[in-house]
Amino acid sequence: MYRDETKTIHIGDRVIGGGNPILIQSMTNTRTADVEATVAQIHRLEDAGCDIVRCTVPDSEAAAAISKIKEQI
Image 1 (spheres, rainbow, N blue to C red):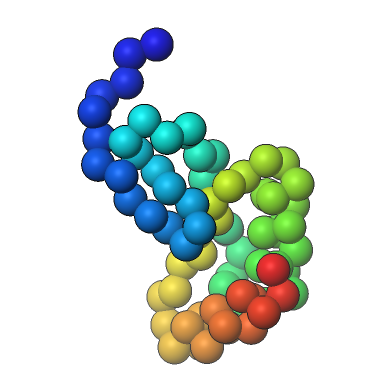
Image 2 (tube, one colour; image 1 turned 60 degrees about the vertical axis):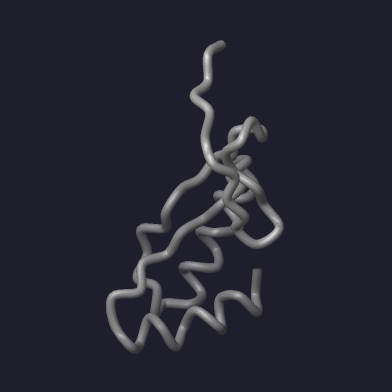
């Protein structure tokens, strides 16, 4: 399979691009401020094989929730 030559980017302990294995990523569709629902969805995505999960941070309430989410995953 042909793959374009790309730059290597580090995301935490993961590496994308530059010939590294393709990582599966997704984005939550829960309200980020709802820590319990967001953590549950992240765990389901992880169980399904997702390597990278993104969350939206549209306001200060969601920004405050990110640290709580990180503690639980």
